[in-house]
Amino acid sequence: MVIGNFALLAGLEPAAVHRWYLGVYVDAFEWVELPNTLGMSQFADGGLLATKPYVSSAAYIDRMSDYCKGCHYDKKLRTGERACPYNSLYWDFFARNAGKLSTNPRLGMVYRQLARMDEATRRSLQERADELRSSLDRL
Image (cartoon, rainbow, N blue to C red; front, side, top):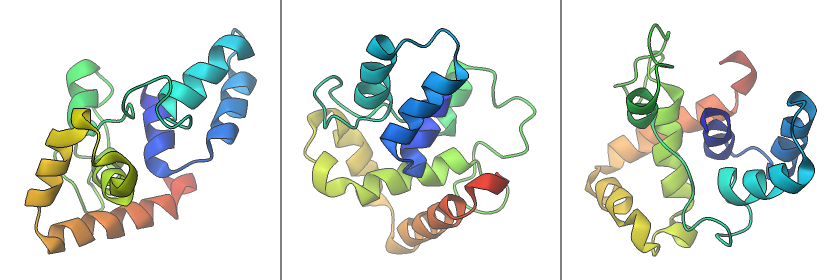
């Protein structure tokens, strides 16, 4: 969940993510892994398998796991050097994909929250997300 979430938020090529999963997991069988990766994890089938992209910010990851414990990044910050990368990538993902996703009834709350953000906040999130995507190898 966490790896696929990051790959989708960061805009990685879904076919490359699929090949990576096959390469690193000894028990990955293509007939199972392909639909799970392209359909669910990467939402690359346009919503045939899943009704919405399976993405989250740091708050959800923290609630559902212990991955945030002791992390260098601050799960509550959206921007800045210490902000968790999932936060700005999450909001930027929805802003970048509004044309395709904003009419999805399951995402209404996300788009209402995004609409309430002022322009400076949205711009700051986009800039931080762009920064992160251009330096993925250093995260």
